[in-house]
Length: 261
Image (tube, rainbow, N blue to C red):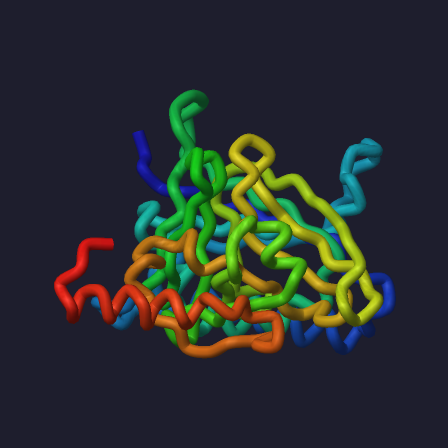
């Protein structure tokens, strides 16, 4: 039985894109089979590529107008293509503004049961999980450090003196497993802020503000190794509880004087 992986992608394109956009997009897509090179061999590794426009008379397309069928020799090759190949990543970034919706299915011929493939964690990504483990995600961080927020909302939501966060581009956060619930409130800007959290254990994963539509605020203390990350900055310092730094100084004095705290 063949072990090849068939990667099927369906796109619904935005209605306002031009024919020139279509031509350039399809030319770039076609070129991926030739330009995507294996990191070890330096040769093309996509086995085949087919594409076409939906021409079915059945009313089940869900608005998807074009299909692309790619074949790879292994799951490792497909994972590299999706998460690390610089040529494909650049293509995806350029294609993003043209696409209104998409659907992706990966199949191995003849395999109808069993677990799905696990998304690999990229070399530039950090994995995170909620308290119960139902929600798992990966995020790209330019610097692995916390930014402490002392605003009253964070203190109220988390029940602590501050929250640990980083602001990252929206596309740099990927939910790998589980589903999130939302809670919406009005931020200091007067615009909505949506909190995304695990519906089972209530761990807050990230916030999305209408005031920053292209960014998300990720809770960094939930990341693997988060407890070992240092604090690299603060926001809303005027809301800092007076005893936060006094406590650190007091504990340090206790250690120096040999006192048990």
